[in-house]
Figure 1 (cartoon, rainbow, N blue to C red):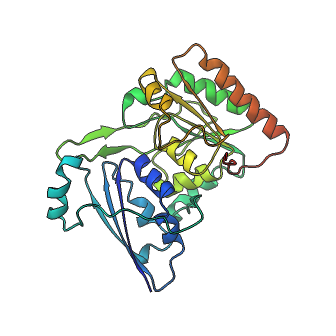
Figure 2 (figure 1 turned 120 degrees about the horizontal axis):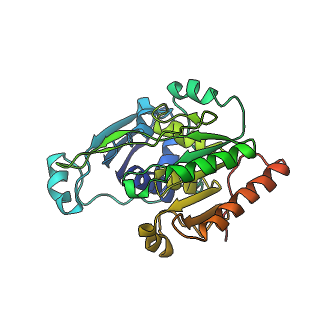
Figure 3 (figure 1 turned 45 degrees about the vertical axis):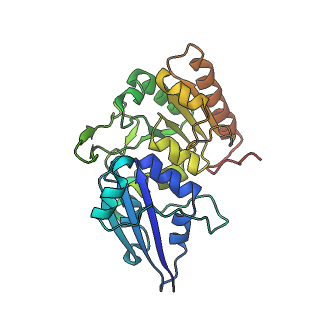
Length: 285
């Protein structure tokens, strides 16, 4: 019998990144009936805890969730909530670095609306509105998916961001196109991850959706504004965009972005014509 302890913090993307870089989440998946776990979530996204609240072994997991605080307050806040200081470092203890997610029971009815069609997940809104995908561009991408008989499925969560003393609202951009499936605010966070897991591809702004796609080694088109280019050019460590062949990325304000988008959809068309089914991308050596 083992008692496990893991901590996750930051935004939803940071939580997913920590899951992928460490092995804690996969270890939770493999707990025996005698094992127990305590998971601490310090996040400004109140939905981050859903990975554990809706986990298949949730009855064995004690979740403690707190509003996000600045690192300079770490010692004070940890003392307040009787958390270890400094935060324990997670030591990888498994060989399987690919995450596996499971839908909650309440996710099954919305997901069933896909009706077995091949689909592309759209995650086009981020905590910072500057990173939102312009809707005229999103509309064009929707039409390109429909031309390939790929169902556009929109995901995301509306919420009040929880920074200690500084809450602010995060809102999602809903699709206007009638042939899109709008699952925004209709899935749990693990339900969204499960949906990406089974997608033909994903189209993301610089958001948690992009990190989920990276963690699941899913082919994706990553689109971001000029202000994010420097982070991407410095090989943003959470995304490792050059380490798996499925990611195409571009600044959507660039005149060259059209070429990247065309290449992405050309690849999708070729793969679909070859009869490829949804799956994970190969990791480069």
